Length: 399
Image: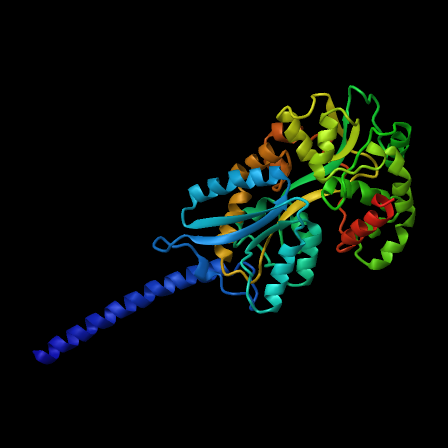
């Protein structure tokens, strides 16, 4: 009897052990599947960051820059996400436009080189140049639909352009914004615009290119006028030798622009001049113009038009730090950002083109972007953008 009793006890213990191991195995398989979304062998396992019903919320750090409307967007989307996902918290770190976003990327790269993981920067928002630089430096995690199902709603070509290293969650373009009450026939080409500026002294303004993308776009468009299509996708310093003619044009414009050489700070600076009637035409981001028209901050006589060759435009990207140990939580957030619900908010609040294909949006949303979402160009010149700003300061602003 004693021997039988001991055998039954051992059998029961073995049964419990097998059941426990089976349960653990199921969880591990689920985590492994979630982690198989593109992280390479030298990336930290993201399974430890997967939210569970009993664990404390996983918090990841999201760094982004831009004008106030960008902050307003995330101040809306993040609470929406957290309300639906109570096991994930987003720590947002906002760097105002013009304050210099480069140190953020430098921190990511420095942490990688020092073997200190993500540097507490798990998700980062920026433009194509930073996507390209981070891909070169191997700091971004590759992304696919196994980790972010809603990536399937994005134009595959857009993902191919960035080698699946970033999420193009919204787009916009720089356009000419003008007061139609004063300008009945706005310029349609760059040459026409340059002539108009000279014929209407003081009625055109663009911001310091180092403080906002609209001014930077105007400067870059002038510098690359007449250059090949390949040059606007080339970060080779040899291209800098081709800028002389463009800088001479910009220098010549000094006495014809607002205040005979006054360059406002930030994208909003030139919009304020247009709103106050101090100038008649400016380069501006389409989303900012649409937003401020909707909020009655600009006169309803302000219209928009793209020129030929077009100003630059394209997506704004979200990149996942390859060394983040919160990747599962970050990808959960990215999937929400690409949901129709979140994209509706992005289009409404930012007046930007949606990150998902426009055909997935309502006809009303598609009609909203007629004449604005076509004709722009995407510049991918890497660190040459910084060189342009330096030379503009010495050759144009300082004159």
